[in-house]
Image 1 (cartoon, rainbow, N blue to C red):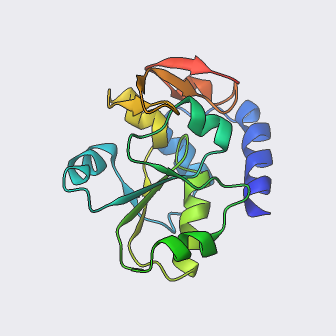
Image 2: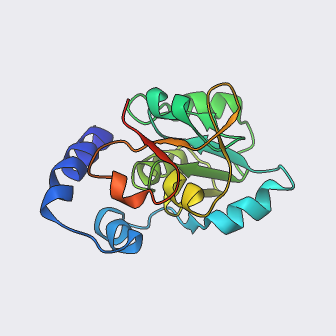
Length: 166
């Protein structure tokens, strides 16, 4: 329910409130209940492969593109029970992301309530990842420049790549 409410609020208020930076946007919508990790930090930590990356966007967004090692979990029908069944070690480092870092905070909160102790939210989400020039892949795991921008209101935050509105 919180995800649906956040989505409605985000879509409506984006037109009413103009944020100047991603930081302004995240300050407005997030509570910082889940600590951030920068795209640079995540990129460096991916090298050792011990971090789990969860994509909290919806299936149509994930199919267009995602981080190469990401597992899709979605947000509208997210189940922390399913994640718990796959990850028995609650101390496993987990990074959750979405387009910008708003939906992923809500999912991160649910993971923390389920007992996961090492959950972080990717600051700026997939958009920031792509804006920094890091690779993304499509559903066939082929590198792509296409990014689902979630809505017309969010497109302004994607500065690199081809915007998709499926």
